[in-house]
Image (cartoon, rainbow, N blue to C red):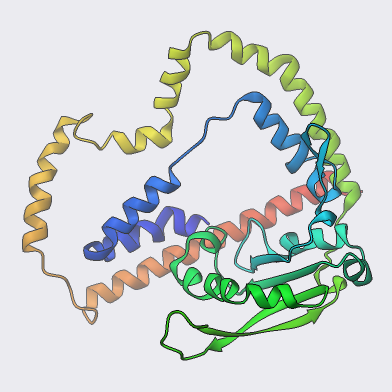
Length: 310
């Protein structure tokens, strides 16, 4: 979401600097966390999940002769998706159900209960970390887990009707209902031949990398110190620590300035004309970036269709 990443996130910080500083820093530290994956781990993820899609097919081998088959799961499955999620939209988040259970009868015969909940606009990251989503959707799901377990086998959509009005935090805060759905309701047509072509291209690219790219990279990085230096020179890191007074001594002057501004600042009223212009300008920037995102996504879809469609 370029609008949030490039503009709204920082604008929200500076426009609410008295209250947002702690939350912003905590989120950035969490979001900026990372894991170092070795070659074997990366290839396993790509081959088995992203390209091989073996989890959906019931062919995911986790070692020692054990495979994960979604059809063996008997506890209710809860799927939370959002129309505002352009990374894993509802069509993608729900389509796997029809691949594992081709018909509603197959799902019922398997004795499984699948419940899905749809949000109208929250983005991909917001599904997991948004405070408003945690207070409403997450809480509603947790409150009604026992009811899900008592549902008859089948596919259901969970719909939040509203708040109960009960002020006791230990009691249910949301009224929900579970409406029966058919597998066809969550089935999305997929151009399998196109994805088969992409699969073959991915395998070819991987073989090219293993034959030429990997030896070349290994020839450049011969010592752990070189790898450590490259990590510290990564733009994502440099863009943060370059502003630290431990790296840039000239930044120390801002420490005293910040204290003075904090003690003497007078916040503009919401009715202030310049504040109004600022908010409108911010909204226009966000709208423009959203439009750029939509153009990008549409362009990528057109390119995919042109290359892989028959």
